[in-house]
Length: 461
Image 1 (tube, rainbow, N blue to C red):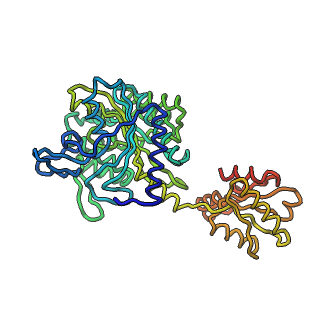
Image 2 (cartoon, one colour; image 1 turned 30 degrees about the vertical axis):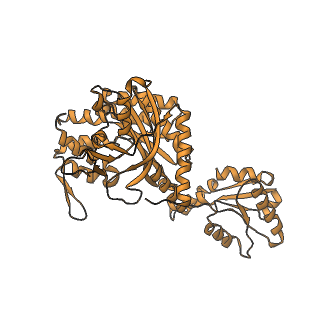
Image 3 (cartoon, rainbow, N blue to C red; image 1 turned 90 degrees about the vertical axis):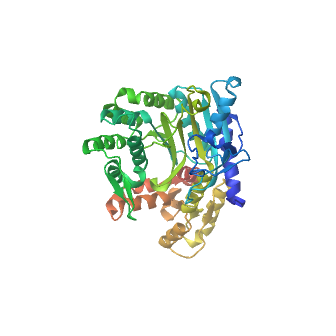
C-alpha cells in the first residue's frame, strides 16, 4: 500500500505516541521478522491445497512454506517459546510493524497495514486482562481520541460456553459452536433477527446467497439471544443480568476485570461489558476485547483494535500451557477513522456577531482577544442581520457564536451560543419547538464581558 505526506505522518505520529504509553506502562520493545515459517502462524496455517489461505505464503528452496506475518501475536508466541528460560515471567512486550492479510480490501480494511501491540505473557490473573483494557484506553487517548470518543468493549468466552452447556450443545460439538460464534460476531451488522436466523436453519442475504445456520431449536436460540442482548448499561448492572443467565462461575473473571478497571480509573464510558464481542474464532481462550471509535451524535466508526487472552498459543511450541493476554491497536485503521471523523465534522472559527455596525470595532476586539488566547476566531464583517449572521456561522462550521447586542452591552455581558450542541438537540427533537425552547438554556448562556475567553474555552471544552 502506497502511503505519502499527511497520511504517513499521521500514522508515524500515532505509533510514537502509543509506543510511549506502552513503555510508560513497563512494556519493552521487540521486533520480529516479516516472514515466519507458516506453521508458526498457527491460527492461519496454510494447508497443501490452499497455501495462501488467509496469508501470503511461498516455498523456500527446502520446500518449506514461509508466510508474511498475519499479526504480531503469533511471532511473539514463537519468540517466547524459543527464549522462554531467559525471559522474565511475566514477559511484557510491545511491538509495532506492518502485517499482511490475503483478503479482499475495503473501506478501512487493507491487505497491508500497521499494528501497535502490547502483550503480557505468563500472567493468568484477570487483572492482566484489565490492564490491557486500561493501557488500550491510555493509548487511544495519547493518539488524540478524547474520552467519550472511544469505548473498549469486553467479554469472555466462558459466558457462551456456560450457556451452550446449559442448552445441551456439548463441548465436543465444535462445528456447531463455531457457527454460533460466527453468528454472534455478526450481531452489530445483522441485528437480532439476522443472528436468530443464523442460529437456526440459516439466512439468505440480499444477493440470494444462503448461509447455513447452527441448527438450534427455538428454546436454544432464545437462550443465546438472551445472553447477547444482556450488555446494555453500567458494568455492575450487566454483571447482575449475566449472573442470572450464565451463573456466577462464568462471570467470575469479568467481576475481577471490572474491579481492576475501577481501580485503574477506567469508568463505564471507557470500558463496557458486551457479550456480543467474540473476536477471532480460533485462538482466544477467555477474555476478549474490542475498541470502537464513537463519533459525533454517537455514530460508531467501527473497531480500531482488539485482543484478548490466548493461553494456548505458546503451548503449540512448548507443550505446556503458558497464560498470555494482549491488545492490538490497528494504526492504519485508526488513522483512517480519525481522518474520516475530522472530515465529517471540522470545526471552524468562533464567530463574533456584529449587532450594530457602529460597534464593529468591539467585535473585532473580542475576536482579537480570543485569538490571543489561542482560540480560532473572526468577527463578522458583512452587512446582514442576526439571522443571516447565524447562518453564516453555521456554514463556517463555527462551534460557538458570540453575541453582544444593546441589552448585553448595558448589562456588561456577552451571550454565547453553542452551535454544535444546538444542531444536535435540534436534530433529536425535530419539530418539537416547545422541547427545544426548554433546552435553550443548555445551548445559550450569558457570561460577563471580562470573562469572554474563559467562557468560550469552557463551551468549546
